[in-house]
Length: 117
Figure 1: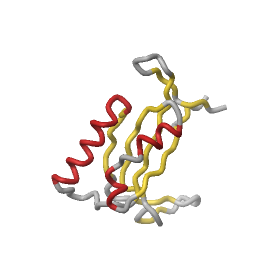
Figure 2: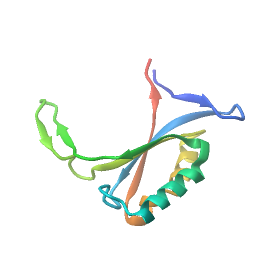
Figure 3: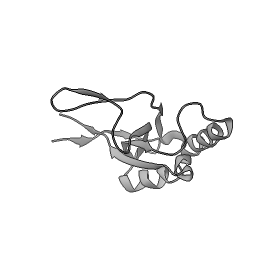
Figure 4: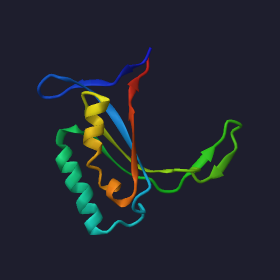
């Protein structure tokens, strides 16, 4: 059975890790300084919740179940990711609502990372 990837924060409360997958919004190529400033301000606001700031994604490919590769990521491709720690999915959603990509027409999907084994 899979269990959440658990760690403790400074107060000793258990927290899980959540992968935030970004979709749409600004093109990840060469963001303007204004865009970078908005992202850095959000990361600062998240503070110790940030486990991995992540990065935008570049070129993509998809491999189907037959092993055949094709260029691109299909509909609604992910444009980047960040990993955060939070006590619950609800808390992670509250933190993710401040994502600057949301103001640019993007969306964020949250996935709880579970430990296998």
